[in-house]
Image (tube, rainbow, N blue to C red; front, side, top):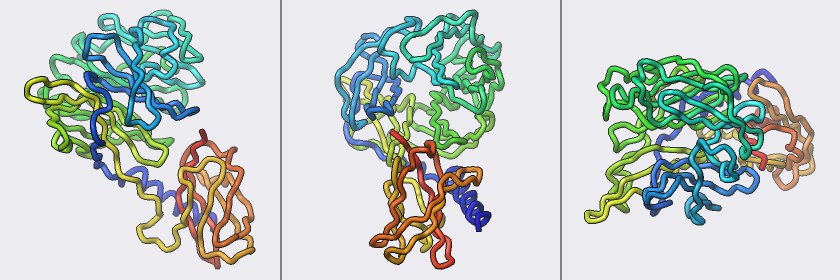
Length: 388
């Protein structure tokens, strides 16, 4: 039975996390921040406050504002340029890369050479010796927007726009020493190297981690549409399709979309923050706008009568399970990890058609399968553990 449960789990993970997702993003009402571009969003996991970093179009230094709901931002503050090593405003800045082993790094360029500084608290940085990366010869000494994301071990992938004024497409470089140095890997990971550059290539790359073992790359093409790619290893990218364009916004006249940055919300959805040029006729301006995805599917099979009803999901310290159980009778509850290991097993008493599962603190953040045998039938569902 345990093997059957795990096979159900594997099939479900493949269906939900690897293949099927709703690419539709629906615009939120209004503007997040006006006279702003190049958004970078960060949410503090201790107090759930959102920090939205951006380029101030009014000529001020790079800035950020805070929000408790991710929609209404205020309290504008300025941040020093990247080469300034130590400043408290870097505590939540997406300019800081979270590396492995509680290490943080800031990267910046001097001509075609990338330098770095290292920290253990995101505030106090020490300049690293030497350099981290030199642009490949195919980049022709110019680059655009970039991003970093963690792979397994001490590996970090660096994705950036190379040959900004020519081919203008994504390139990737890899570090295997936790971000100390990078080696050029590919000038054509998205397959558009020979498309002619300009509006014909995918630019403004930004990676979002969507599970412990997969990522989604959001890009812009043509100035008015955003697209996504899927990758499980950082080397190979599968095109998924368009997820948002200027015509999606009907409340105002959006004429361009740039630099999408997507964050995973606690309810399972995703919110995209993106810079848009707003044409008002007489006084056009840049603004950061946002759009939200649909809720992800949660049952193993659509209309599956044996799918457990679980809440809250994501869960932290407890989980309630609704099913047609007999009051005061005890039922075996098991929670499986991605590799089929049992992380939780207990006999839970049914009370008013519910099983109350407690003490989930020891289970790390991630996706799991919860299963119950009821009257010789298997009831299962996916859950996400997300501790504050």
